[in-house]
Length: 561
Image (cartoon, rainbow, N blue to C red; front, side):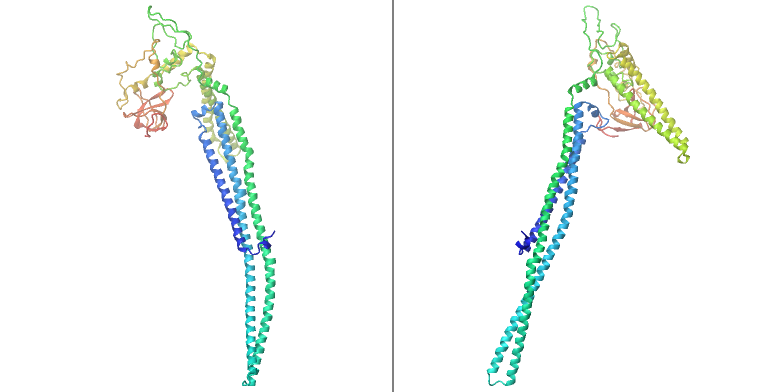
């Protein structure tokens, strides 16, 4: 089966067919290109999806991912990220092994096809030239034969005519002989050219065309084999990533199997356990006798004098009867969290203190590593003075040492509080409650006075007209205020002090130029902004003295100043 013998007269059709084959190859390349683009787009969408649902660092959301179900979800997101990577591998391999390879091959194929058909057209032109030569010699031979016949007939006519002179007859005879010789020469030439044409035609149809068409056939068959190999590669590229994709899916299954509902339940207990004992029974109060209320020894109220109310700021939250009632409204208005976290239940306080100790230890280790690095650098400078002055590092070394010492003192302070808490768990003593209450009561309610009358004079003075009305009279039998609670004011942004302000009036706070503080309440139109320095220092400063940066996501934030 050969195109040279079977399709010897189908030159034009073979030319169209091979061009169609190249078009098919280019169409397949385009198909694979679009597949790679789809894979890349899919991988990008998967990565964006995984990134979108990853918890933000240093956020409350990240703390919530301590539960096994949330950890499994994180593992699923990570596996999906790896899964997306395999689709990127598919795209990359298809581009390099199929698209790139076929693009190079198709250029070679076009060049080879062009060369083969150029040889075919050249052979065609040669045989057509031979055919034209044959036709020309044939026509010349035919013309010479006719001329010889006419010359012979003229000679015979002249020879038969008695009126024609002998010279005319001889002239006609010579002319006839010349024409006859020309016819013989044309015959010989025609015979030679015909013989040559037949040879060329035989070579054309039995040698040149078969060879050219055989090359074209082999070229086309290689194209067919190449596209078949590319299709196999297409499947192999997918098959190569199947094991890794399977591992990704196995990882998701393993993460799902690692979910432990009992462990998550225990984590909820650890997160919200207060450490308090449930309140005991409430004794019967006989109103026929003078008013006297006794509280169970197991209750959570502060110890108070019999029938004598105790006046406290911030201590009410430690002396309330029910552990599920919110903190006292007035103590929360201070917006300050004690440094020793004494406002938290024992268990939560222990966790916060432990967390603080761990953070301080990490900072100490970091500073110690920095000190070691500076010491090594100083040693290098001592050995090689041309590299630097060792004395230039003394100041930095002293600063780091001071920082380490401060951090150690801070750590000792928190470790002492931690030891105190761990020593009295699971139940807090009455003495500890009193200490917590005293800590809160030590902070004067200056902020409350500020909040009572926002329409104050610009000089920072606040009236005391409602001071008597704002006095707190906490009775053990009074439950009204227990249910009239509110959350502490959260920070809604930060501010930077533009100028130094001496807060000498009650309710104001002093700031230093360049100091950064927290904003907890915007300027309501009276020219004052409420700020906070730390857990227990807050007050008002003139708005014109600070540059405020409000958090758009904070509750109550409206615009940037």
